[in-house]
Length: 313
View 1 (cartoon, rainbow, N blue to C red):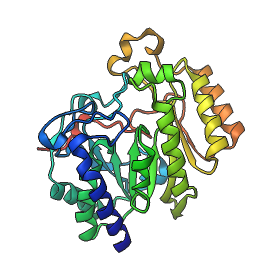
View 2: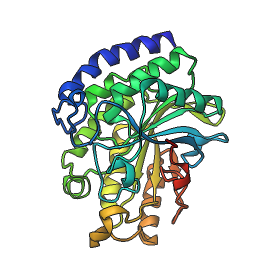
View 3: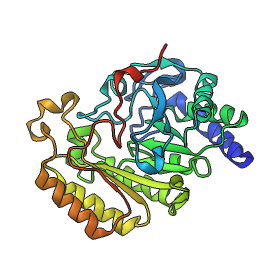
View 4: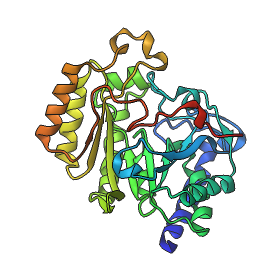
């Protein structure tokens, strides 16, 4: 852990000053978050957390029997129109938490037998998270760190996480610039996403396990969007060609949440014909990982949770 602490300290030194003119993500807002300004993600200097709990609905290799120690950060640098977590990802509902408080959350989850610390939507709070990790690891945190991201990342930032993050859990949402622009206001998503995934793969090309629990590796999530399975197949083909040894998690839990109900093209769920075509294509590529069932339960293999799990003030 001493080497990890040194890498964290290096990351803090390089990332914390960038909050003065924030360029941590591809939005490059250049606002002074230390001075109270807010960029696209709506985040300031102090971490905002919506909830933290043992999540048993992630992929089996992450949740295991005891659950993934999941911490949901409020705000987001992407902002998808179909976001199921819009109440805190878009509106920033949640509680301000100090570095020490965040570190205590991590240690508490470990004491509850969490298999890992699962940092959900961490990008915009990355310097602050490193500060908390420095405290937590110094006080005994020793379980794997999961970087659970939308995948809208800069390669240079991901490179700073080498030796710190144990499991990368990024989305690969789109290859189509038009779809990325329409759904997430990020026409350059694919270019940044691919570069970041290649860097993650450079760091974690081989998965490691302790029993059935993943301890190191890269798991790429893809949520199938109705009417756009051609994009899905292009994504899967790219994965097979460029990062074939990663694990994949193909998800069919799309629902027209938030503003998606106002967009006729995506105001429905994936139909059975789309599901079968994608499933058959995944199997033809022999990609390792998980495929959700058709019409999966809302609390499985994703970031869905019920309101009673909201973090108390």
